[in-house]
Image (cartoon, rainbow, N blue to C red; front, side, top):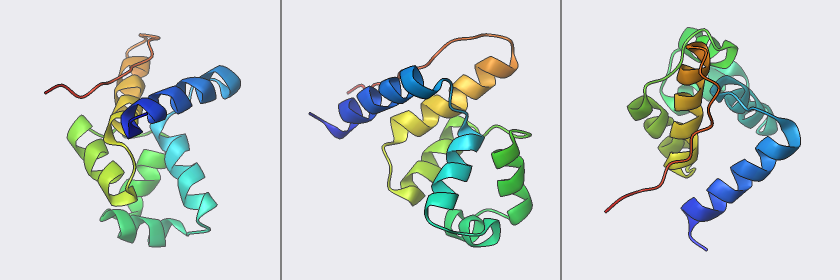
Length: 105
């Protein structure tokens, strides 16, 4: 199974079990699992601490290209992280959709 397919299956299973995961909640969980402070994590991602805080709190939603850069810094499948950012954008507009991305050739 490809990394993207396994990531998609994994995110679908997590959504079934725990409900909607926001981009910000994902960042907090990832940072805390590595026992990092916001300042340390922000440096790792190449962000300011204030910007990271805004992302974690959902006050800002990253563009798809920024979400892709964050995924690369964390060495995670890009599609799943970009999908979280897109879902947050839709959710903010009152559109309750889940997003599943697949790479095209």
